[in-house]
Image (tube, rainbow, N blue to C red; front, side, top):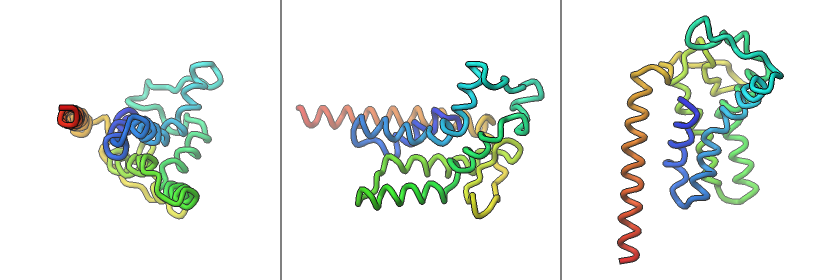
Length: 170
């Protein structure tokens, strides 16, 4: 799934309590992609890395992307890594930090929406390299329903919030 959709779904699922939780959940929803690809993309903008070659099709060959991107991707897209960090935060805080759960939601959504030929989701890393050959999120059968559902749920969310606000004040 695209990075913005991850943030929006995560905020809807785990950030409805208040504005701060919304943006915290949004951050954790985009964090797996931000931390795996963000440094590379920023590096291409400032000239540290060569720009990826998009001429071969929809995506550059994974072998042309630096090793560290793949390494960060493995960590940030592992349910085991997520579970460990979420558990440590829960232990430290003595209660779960629900906006962080959007990281786990990101991984779960990526499993069926990434094809095996371009960054399949290593959800059991480091104990297994098993992945699912899913339908890429850019395919119309995934992309358009995703956008339509996001729009519908956000319209519903804001309408319900507005109705609650009117009921409280009036």
